[in-house]
Amino acid sequence: MSEKTVAIVGAGPVGLAAAAHVLERGMSPIVLEAGPEAGYAIRQWQHVQLFSPWEYNVDKAAARMLAPTGWNSPDPQAYPTGGELLEGYIKPLATRTSLCEMIRTSSRVSAISRVGFDKAKTKGREQAPFEIRYKNGKGPEVLRADAVIDTSGTWFFPNPAGPNGLPAIGESERGDRIAYGMPDVRGAGRSKYAGKTVAVLGAGHSAVGTLIDLVHLANEVPGTRPVWLLRGADPAKAFGGGRNDKLAARGELGSAFAALVASGKIKVETEFGVTHLSDSEGRLKIAVGSCCGGRSVVVDELIVSTGFRPDFSFLSELRLRLDPAIDAPVALAPLIDPNEHSCGTVRPHGARELVHDEAGFYMAGMKSYGRAPTFLMMTGYEQVRSIAADLAGDKEAAARVELVLPETGVCTRGGLEAASEAGCCGGPPKEASSACCAADESAKKAGAAGCGCS
Image (cartoon, rainbow, N blue to C red):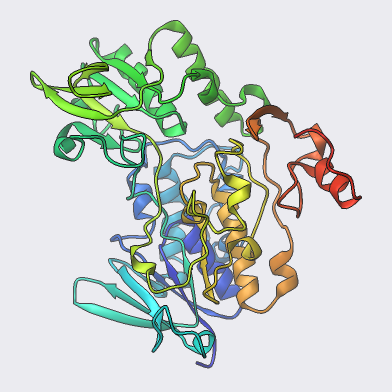
């Protein structure tokens, strides 16, 4: 091949940003999108307002591509909904720039391998191009590429209700009463939830936002009763950093939720690890423990907001290097492992942390975080900027940090709660993955054990 061809799986915000950076580096991107349009996953949560303003949601290389088209850059301080992100940024980028010729929609990737090499064969492997197989409604198609960036995300692979990673007993048989993620309870789903008792399982932003929407729905339609099912024992962990959060909308979300819980407008069931789902006189019985004993609640609808997980089914012939616990690249995993910390802000990282044993293959965006729940869109933009530089052979640019992230407020590291205000300990570390902040990084570089904050 005369110039490097890079296949990009997924045409969401990070996938399109990857294509823009690859193109700027003189390489040829081909974007394969499973849905009928770019940003199709966003269409599923278009009612949700982002807690990051426009300034953090537009990739720089993408903005440079949009500038000659007459695109009106949104107010950088305004907070878009998913629909506004789609209409004001994703659609123009996918249809009004040269990327439109490089995006293949309704093209679902079914497998990726190396031409002439199965997973076990090594000698000469790195020189062989990738073979990407996909389906587009016309039969199987094959694409060859020098490199692959998988930005397919996790949206269509939600975690189940069971606390052990498996569906609760009876979950698969009751799909008509169960929704996943963050359904539009006040809009498209209004008739389904209005006037009903609705349980929401989870403790992340999707669960919090859905419960807040259900309270608003209850104010509009009497008889609507939100029930929060929390696996843990402490509801306060879902309230976030409040005014310490440098993303104001994220902090306000937690504060507003805390006030609603305190007011009694949301019924709270703590230590509720759902094990069984069954019918109960035309309603849904959600139980902890055996189906005939233990605690239970009876509701009309259940919303499972317990996060998402990546799909590796089409990557089985590639040599992946993944953390065994959270399914993220092994170098990235310590930065985002929820067993160690719950910070919503993770220091910028790139090709170095996203590398696999399969040369030329990278995961980026939400999928790179595996089962960790802390991803920010701007983190994905920094990832693909670095990856494109690495593929172009610019190792210096690939290693350089070109992003400053807002602090999350209050988080836990190693089980200890700590304030992470912008001035505290100098902000996040720049390079060392073992450091918890800039001061800790400097101390370790000087030969000390650390700054002591962690």
